[in-house]
Amino acid sequence: MTIGIGIIGTGTVGSGVIELLTTRAPSLAHAAGVEVQVVAICAKESSELEPYAKAGISTTTLATDLIDDPAVHIVVELAGGYDLPKSWVERALKSGKAVVTANKAMIAKHGGHLFPFAFQHGTEIRFEAAVGGAIPIIRSLREAFVASDAKSLACIINGTSNYILSRMAEVGMDFSAALAEAQAHGYAEADPTFDVEGIDAAHKVAILASLCSGQRVDFQKMHVEGITKISATDVAGAREMGCAIKLLGLVEIHEDGIDARVHPCLVPYKHPLAGVNGAFNAVFIDGSTSGPSLLYGKGAGRLPTASAVVADIVDAARRIHDKTAVVNLSWMGAKDASLRPLALAEGRYYLRFQVADKPGVLGRVATILGENGVSVASMVQHEGKGTTSMVIDTHHARESDVQTAVAKITAMHDIVQPAVVLRHYDRGVVE
Ligand code: HSE
Image 1 (cartoon, rainbow, N blue to C red):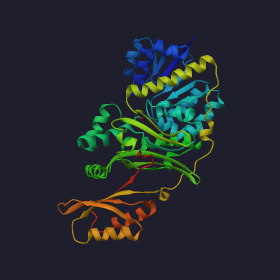
Image 2: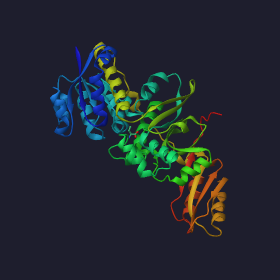
Image 3: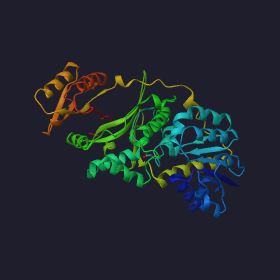
């Protein structure tokens, strides 16, 4: 018997998957217990399909043709997007085929519907590559941490943003040059605003939060900020405070709801997440019995992501061949999570105000902070030409108080740019 693989999408990841399935066929057959072969490929443009057609593989520009092909047992969806791939996945599942995908957007938006749908049709969806590239985080949360009650998690989960922030910190590169480099390495999404505005990270954090909580977490209801407002001044200011700036995904399960969010944070150098640089991703899990664990690896790129897709294909092929039970993930969509409002958050804050450099401005800023219960821990201001950056680090404060104070300060005439508000992250600091 041979398990036939149909691949939709021949872009960065798709071409990597085809390469691995072809060049590693003997060892993959050994791992799966059955031969696994690419039998059909679908791409948007017929020109992309020419080399595969020459190699004798069935090719098409219509995903539905590939899905309906009786030689295809596992449909691998690598096209991306929210709704069109969902219709393809439903079609494949309805006919009892297994689905493997790297599509975090589709899983985040439609997973709550697709998981029970797959189970009802006696089949499954695997999506290890959707979160953290080569890091086996989905398997870990589903299997290895089941006795550990992972109620708190922090992650660096977007390789492009982490690459940009690392290059800004290490070589003083500006934002757009670092983004261009990340794109050239194949880390970025087709629309890089998904990376730099935190949307890609939000898709992944919603999936992780669902796995941790057993509830459906809607990424559209999460607090999400990207990294476009971070400047060289902030990178330098954080460094002076002994911190790196990282785009973090945070999940905390509380009695009164789930705190799931994405925003840049100041991470102290002594925290393991501060040392995660370049396109690397990491997930820091605080389990009630396991204690803190860090899973670290390549979160983006052609072969790291392809390796996770291929591992899922091998698992699905083994299950089909052995006729063993499918993984039932219906529980992930059974109940809508109640998300905890950001206003309930607390911690230390980094605030940067671009202000007119004239008498009384500092006094008024400090007064507003004090009147709203926000205590200043340190303040740095370098002399400028007419305007200056006022960088304030606060003591522990309430988010709602900080937001009220920042809104009042922003309304002052002497503020010349929107304020930058960054939160400190210090859970799990290794002393
Ligand atoms: N654009 C994504 C990233 C690719 O930079 O992490 C992997 O999901």
